[in-house]
Image (cartoon, rainbow, N blue to C red; front, top):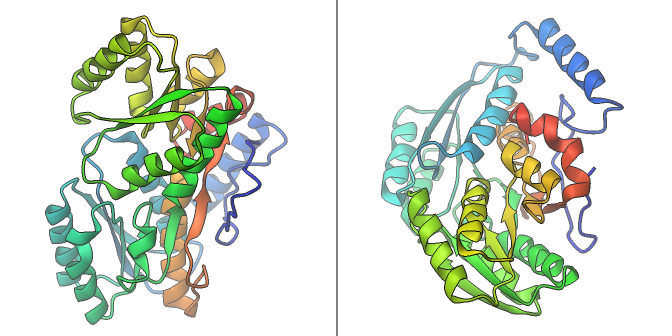
Length: 334
């Protein structure tokens, strides 16, 4: 499948009951999925108590990345006989309020993102005081242990950025723009930090209003029109890659468009050469393992990571890898 950087230590948590890769053929994989779904008939695979887990993320409305995270979590919840509650808000204080609401409901476990950790600290302290186990996911690996979480599941954003910088070096790029679409998101800053750390060329940060794709396009198009030396654009989320392509076309730029995260449109763009490469952090795996690890903790006091994050990426994906992943992206698991 897609290659992993040899200098990145990836610690995958446990074995999934449903493998997402390694099948001899797409048809065989689909048949196997159908067989397992039919045999399960929507029933749990265990007879443990029906605990309630709440996942609260910093997603905005309509973000397809978080649809994949949620899908993975829901699949694990079904298998583990979990009553799964999902909520989200892209404002830190509102997200903290959702965590407090879950605590008030006396849930049995909480999964939470720490894109804006300062806003979340007191809520997680309250969860710890209430004896509710917490797993952080996706963002906040550096604050997770300090805030009392059992473990963190996701990718190290700085390492992911370094992987991008190394790939840009291999492609002979000299000047890159790192497009940040959510101000205040520490993970996004860390990604650009990582690019700057490993990239031998020049990196400039461009802050855009990620809630408006027309604004994103116009801001990037203006940058590419005024600076023809830019030969690489790095977007920090899959939905923004297509917008960056439009900005490139509008500016008459020859810059390569690369992105963090993967979806069906990104896979198609890699195949047809519209995009150069993508960095996948496997969001389905993040959601699935977060629920599964909470269940394991409740059932058997198991904890993974040894005090360190359980890494699900980065995985650098190019045109050579896209076809093999296309079916998975279309079904919403990659």
